[in-house]
Structure formats: structure tokens, C-alpha cells
Length: 538
Image (cartoon, rainbow, N blue to C red):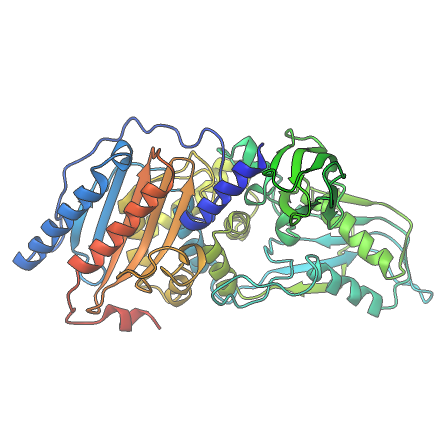
């Protein structure tokens, strides 16, 4: 895959969403059609004369935004609702299916907060069935047992405006290893194991594409996640044309080796890189050229076997601290049926779920969202098939009032091109969420226009700056945005804007979404009699 194309797309997605995807994109949704605008839906409060005028003005602006090419060639679903009264202010194709992209994260993070609670913490342990002798020999295996913590990394919490890091990528494992050293362990007679048996083995959900699996946004799912199940390949060009380009993988991993065929070109030549990794292959091939004296290129690559990678990293860290390992590093994907319970040698306790959810929605982290769904499901036991897994969120959506069939779900993050939702399903979910005790954490997790997360660089210097709190979504041919709008007059509205089958240069659909947000804030700006914002946003 051509790296420059990846970097260009990555930059575009950083504006439109943090979910990157390449390939054929979303399938054409032939069942969709452009429906008539309906100012109010069945059972909703009757619109006042002023509200009807506002709807008419917004409709005219929406038609102007969406009625020109290339945005008009795609399909659009829009729904805007008053947050307090539930009055439908505007709708178009609100009951049609759309590929939601990362708007699916709205469903999964709400599910996790509702079922686990904002104070829930993950526990990752180092366990053994052996004993430590007086000479410091641990007689048996040492296992890193994962329970779904998505943040075994060097991230700093809580998230404030941007993602920050401190220390090496494997910092959480370093702390566990230091605890082993503190117990006086000098030798391990058995193996070092990465145990991810807490989740059934299903690395890639239905609907993820081959290209996704190479890059960080498509990292394999496992109950063990060390630094997002990624490593960095850094390519450093030479001082002169013809010099070799140095390639370094950090941290080291047994997951793949690099075949580096990149050379240094003249300083005025544009970079030209391609990277390929066939599914299941343990060789990454990178070819092309980098200009002399140019800055190193860092490519973040996904790990296909997270448990094996974690075990190898753990073994290396132990050996670096002088602990002798008699066995090997290996993965364990099934429950260990030992006769006795293992002893916990060391434990890592995660940040509260409320902090983890904020990171997920702000930067649109796919793998972490998948971990939340499986952690919720694991509270009720082990599932056998993906269909059984997806029954867990379906029950929650029903409780939230989402109509049966309005969500067709293949994964938790929205990277799957098989996900389908209606704008009404999203607005219903958000309306339900604002009445819940955990809403403060949910609302705080949403990117803010012109301020942070995946909306940091969007809607700046517009009416929408600081007033749109919403989740972005982007895969090929899909741009979505759903959340809450706080008007200058103090009114809160809930909205879902979904677009599919978009062509153009990607920015046109994102520009149209910005225009819709500005029009929504300006045309539906009234001062409410009672403040739902103060009632629920604590």
C-alpha cells in the first residue's frame, strides 16, 4: 500500500474522524431514497408557528448545502430534536439505514457506562501456580493475564484537550515487572505466558477489511492490549542519495520481520513509499525512497498476535532486569484447567471507565471500543459466536427505546462496513443517555467543535465553535456527525447527520456537516423556559 496515500488519508480523517479506512469502502445502500422533509413526527409535540418558520429556514439552508454536487450524489439522513420537549425540529430520511462509521461508538460507550458504571476498573495480573524459593527461583510459569484493559500503555490520564504520553510504550508492563523484582525473583523455571483467554478468540469482527488489519486503527482484538497492540516502524533516510534507509521497530516484536527495500533519494525528490503485509504473514515489506536529510518517517503498525507479543515483551523486560528465564515466551488462548487457583504476583489496576470512555470518543479509538463491548458481555459469561456477542448490546438498545431493527451491528467501533443504523436510533439513544446518572461522563467524552478531539480543527471561527459536542465518523465514502448542540440562547438540541456514498475529495461532505451545524444553531436558537442542561449536565 502506498504510504503517501495513507498519510494523506490519515490527515483527512484526522479532520473528519479518527477512524481510518482504505479499500472499496461502504457498499451502496440501494434501499435508500431521498425522502420528503417532515417537520414533525408522529406523536411529537405540535410545532408552534415560530418553530415551523425556523424549520422552514433550516430546510432551505440544508437544501442549499446538500443539493449541489458532489454532496448531492450521496445519501443523507438528518434528524434534529429538541432535547427537553422531544419535539422533532427537522428530519430527512430519519428512518433509513446508513453506515454509521464511528458514530457506532456512541452506542458502545453508552452501553459500557450503563452496565459497568463510570468507576469500573480493569485488573491485569501476573499469576503463577508455582512458588518462590528462598533462592529467588519461581518454580513454574509466569502468566500475564488480561481482562480487557485497553490502556496498558504510557498514556496520561485524565485526557485534557489532547492525547499525552509519559515513559516507554510498555510502561504498564514495566511496573508489573518491577513488582516481580521487588519480590526477590531472580529466575523463572517455566515459561512466560500471555494469557488472553478472558475473551473468546476473535481478532477481527465481520466487515473489517484486509487493509485495516495492517495499521493501528485495525489492530487485532485480544483480552491483552499492550500499547494499543501496535509497534512503530521508523524509517530514517541517509545524508546522501544512494545511502540505505535505516528501519527500526520499537518495541521489538516476534509478530513480524521487516523486509526493508527503501533507499535514499536526492533531497528534492518527493517521498515514495509502499508497505504490504499479507494476512497472516510474518513479513512486512516496505519499498520506495525517502529524500536525503529528510525527517524520519514513523509508521504505526498493528500486531496480529497480541498475546504472543505481550509475552515476548514481558520476557524481555524481565531479562533486562537480570531475571533468568528457563522457558520461552508463548501465548495462551484457552482457560488453564489447573487443579489449584493461581497466585497473583503483581497487579495493575486501570483508570476509571469514565476516563477511558473520554479518551475513546475524543480520539475515536477503535480497539478500545471493541474491548468495552466484550467486557460488558463477559459479565454474563462467555459467548460462542459473534451473533451471541451482538445480542448483548441489542438488549440494551431496546431498554433505551431504540426501535427493533434500527441498529444492525457487526462490531463495537464502527470500522465494520456491515454496521447499519438510522438517524432516529442515534437521537433516541442520546435522548435516553441525557436522563441517566452517567450522562456527565458521556457528554464530557464527546469532541467539541474547534476545541478538542476529532473536532479540534473543524468549525473554528464559526457559530459552532464550542457549541457542538458530537461524535465524528469516517470510513471510505461515509461521513457522519451526531451529538448535542448548545445554542447561544441556551437551548439544547440533539442531532444526527449521516451521509453515505460520498465521492468528491472527502472534504465536501465534512464541509456540508459544518454548514448544517451552523444552520442548526442559528435557526433553532431560542431560549427554553426550563434548562435541561442544568438539570442533567452535572
